[in-house]
Length: 445
Image: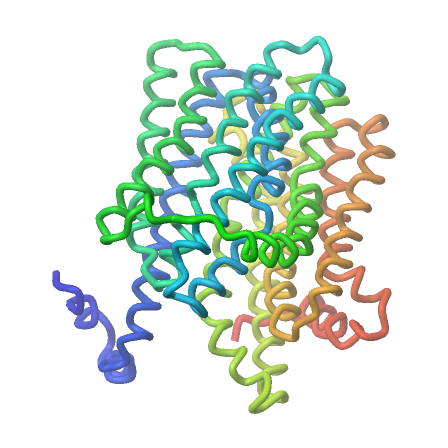
């Protein structure tokens, strides 16, 4: 099929609307590649994750999940909040792309080299005698350094050419998954599976460099600019802080639970999280596809803009209810089918965590809503409120109820970040009203 062959697969009215609009076609194709990557990770990732969990058992799977969540918290430091800033600079100053990419690479690799030992040192304070977890964190933390090469991804984004990146990421994920399958079939150790997991970041880095060279660009032409370093560093700090807060808000439950309960109980919680989050890519894909078009209405027709945003709130809450209601009732059967009898304690955890998805959906559209209105401070405030709530509730509830306490803390803190924080500020009451209407009377139409 040639580059335009996919148009013939569309209904005639839709095909007529996009024929000749090559930029829109390019955006649709790129979104399709991104969606394909997410679908692969959802399907294959769940299958491999379940297989690995059954092989390792709750204790081994709990250790691996704790290490992964722990390292993910430090990834915000390694990424340094440069994503949107670098893409903007590449679009605005295409002739200076070598200096932009070179300077961004220096910032990221420096941040990665700082975040890796920081993660190791912090872990020795949390779990001083746990050498297995320390080795797992060391292996998985290698991705914090390799992520520096992913500034190439930002260049492809600026060219609206994510096809190459999607292929690289899908290939790396597939090879890493194959490595895990081989480890399980050969009866390999937990550390070997961690090696296979860590290899994905290395494969992505090598693949991106190869794709960059095929595009006609050369890494050797990258340069470092002090002026750009100062401007990029200063501009990235607010996004860095937001990223750190977001990662704490997203993964602190598993880190705190892993530090306060047994590895086995952590494994049960990780299994419930794996199931509850498997569909989280859907709201992100919806927003990616439709929200850029809606943003154009913000200045031209604010009333229509608000109406469309309300429809998105309604739709995503409706989808959340459609998933959460049956999953709550079928949680024991779902856990038994996927993870087996050893993970049955995960069933009540899933019944609670699945409702966090409703508020996670709200957070996706709420974030896009605030970004469209240029409410960066409100976004940071609401995410910070969710992170603080999560930490406080985990401290209070985990000692009493263990993994169930962490599940309740996650669900409540997600609500705070998505809705509760908006109720505490008069300027955010209009957004709070839209969210309340969606929660009370969601509709898909």
